[in-house]
Image (cartoon, rainbow, N blue to C red; front, side, top):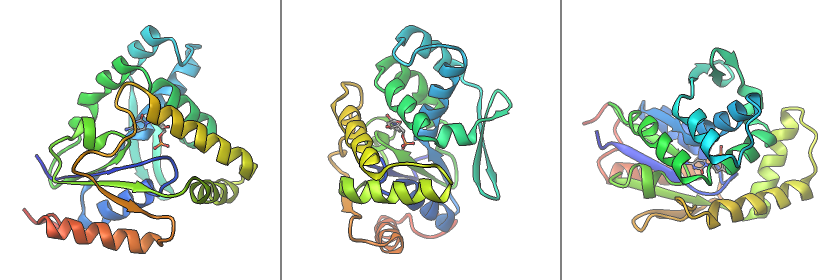
Length: 228
Ligand code: DC
């Protein structure tokens, strides 16, 4: 099944919102690959395994009992039956994800789990290496960016709305630190695929980005709901 739209880019560029919007519009499945790395970080924490202990982290990755279930207030994440949604979405969840994601064997162990989600009628895949490593044959690859300042401000508003107390300068530092770690790692670094189309969302609304991506999907014959 080759009907895959990849949405890659740095933290806070709006990939999650855009991917959900495209998937809902087309009636396609959604892969939030960051959530898989986040759950892995949480699972390691629960077992007292350090995020840089490659051998142990890979073992956890190989039999990660994770489930994603759509709910009224977004997707709920369960790990071996326990609801870990808020831990997975927290800042610490993001740090753990970024730390375990540098381990090449972890990325390899999670490949088939991600690829098996490419099923009819189509898949919108949100992540860092969807277009470069996981779905290199995808017919549409978007690399979504925004300035670090714009991304920190968006994240700040999101966390405040969820009642988490955060400092904007600290968020900006964290975003820059995570960008550097994601971009500089040897295994599947954050970099656009050669055939990716770059969209800078700094000055665009969510709807403007959605319309751009949907237009590109139509151009490639992917745009009609339920089409073949
Ligand atoms: O998209 P996110 O913020 O949920 O991702 C959390 C971390 O997981 C991010 O810092 C890098 C890592 N990640 C990755 O290495 N590869 C992916 N396909 C998705 C996320």
